[in-house]
Amino acid sequence: MSRKDEVAIKANREINAAKAKKLQDKVVKQLTDNKIRKDLGLPPEISDVDETRLKEYAKQVQADVENPPESQAYNPPLPPGVTPPAISSILITVTRHEGWQGNIGWKAIIESGEEIFTPTNLSMAEYTNPDCDGYLYTTGAFQDIDGVFTAVCPPGQEKGDVDLNLGLLYGAAKLSCFTLSAGVQEKLVYAYEEQ
Image (cartoon, rainbow, N blue to C red; front, side, top):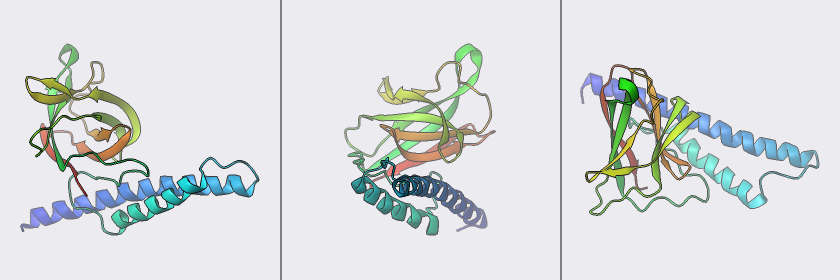
């Protein structure tokens, strides 16, 4: 492995650990807020069953904090109650793309190793932060354009050649978070692998 590859993997691990920690902090805050409500005699916002599920989820995320993945995209564990898609893997190619009134936006093409693949309940979203925080918008479902499933930056959302913080959504659950950095015209992302 080259020194450049080692540096890239180390950087990916650090980024993914930070994303996992931020996700874990959100879950812990939910649990803490719920405990405070109970201690004050207020009705809890989270049922006892969901509280147990959230505690287990926080433990799963802790594994990513302690041993972060080295991939380009962070694939957080699915939240409690979300059944994973019946897909073994997803590959996304994100490309800068001329959009509304000639402004530079982006398009994403989704593929899978499945013999028959329809990206049901999958969409792309853009965020203000690289850890899929600060939701801006979603493209809606991937559209079949000449046999290629594509999602395109909505008209008026084109930001030009800047960092784009993107996420692949399965319903409302985040399957992966990644950034198309300023100056990069195309990025290939292994966005999901069956676990």
